[in-house]
Length: 322
Image (cartoon, rainbow, N blue to C red; front, top):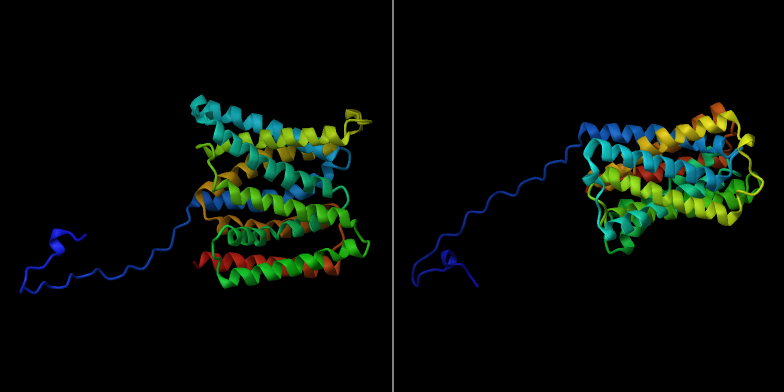
C-alpha cells in the first residue's frame, strides 16, 4: 500500500524523490566514567589474583570466597539503600532470579573455581588462563546466532593455542593439571555469566544488581564449602594476619569496587571494550606474583601467555571496528 503522496496522476511525470546522502556512523564516544571504571577493573582485578593466593594460604577456598562476597554484597546493598533509597533495590522475581543465576555463574563458577585452583597453581598462571575469556564470548555469540568478524575467529584460534601451551606446566608436572583444568572451567562459567547478563532481565539499578549477584554467589560458595567439609578442623586462630589483610582487600577493592565497576560496565559499555580487561589483568598479576610471591616465569607460561594476549587483542580490535 502506497501513501497518497507517492501516487502519480495519469499522464503526469512525478519527479524522483531526493534521497539524503548516506551518513557515516559517528564513532561512539567513550565517556570518562567508562575509562575510570576500566582502569579500576584493569589494576584492581589484576591484583586480586595475588590477594586470593595469600588468602588461601591459611583459609579454606570456598569458605573465604563466601565471606568475601556475602559481606561485600550486604555492604553494597546497604550503600545503595542509603544513597538512593530502598526503591533502588526493588526488583521483580524474574529480575532477582536472573541476578542470582548471573551471580552463581560469575562468582561461584567463575571466581570460586579460581580460588580453589590457586591452592595448587601460581597466581600468574591462573590470570593468564583467565585471559582466554573473550575467546569463549566469541564462541557463545556464534552459538547464539550472531556472526562475529573473521578476525575474531582468528583471535579465538590464537587464544586456544595459547591455552594449550599454558597447560604444559600441568602436563609436565610442574603444577597440578587439576588446577589448570579448574581455571579453564572457571573461564567458561565466567564467559557464560558475562554473556547472559546483557540478555536476560536484570534489576534496573546496576549497583543493586551487583549486590544481589554477590550475595547469591557468596551463598553458593558457602553451600559448596559445607559440602566439601571445609569447616572440619578449621580454626580462626590458624588464619595468618596477612590472609586477613588480603581478605579485607578482596572485599573492599576486589568486590565492592572492581566487581561493581565491572557490572556497571556490562550495562553501559560495549562488551568488546569491557573484555579488554582480560589482557591487562594477566600482566599485572604476573608481575605481582613474581615480585611478592617469587613465582617463577617458565617458558610455557611466557609463550602461552603472550599468544593468549595476542589472540585477545585481535578479538577486541576486530570487534571495536565493527
